[in-house]
Amino acid sequence: MMQYTGQLQQINLTYLEQGHLMVIVLTNVADIPKLEFKHAGDTTWREHPGFDGTITNGVVIQEVRCISGTMRLNFAGAPASPYFLSVIDAEDF
Image 1 (cartoon, rainbow, N blue to C red):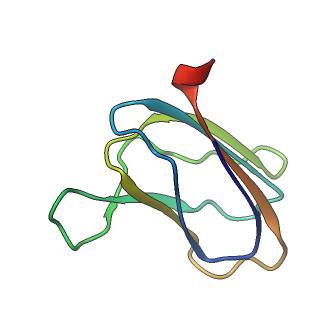
Image 2: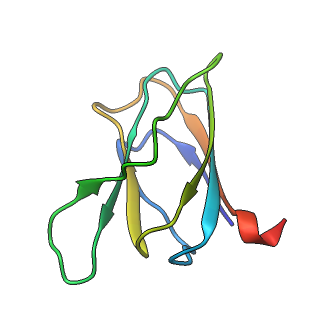
């Protein structure tokens, strides 16, 4: 599990298990970040096709497949106020 509180525009996700389902929980967000990944040996960040990041009252909760051990959330600009992030391995439930 990973937790973060702050205003980073880009945040690398940690403790990922490739192939596992993970739940991304963001609160206090005004904009939808992209979920991006790098494939093994690739140097280009690519957008995760399964993350739509729907916001409801400042909250995003979405289950997605971890397709790479190198993933990040990338906001279009630096958030104006701190947001809260949890990444949970759904296999642990």
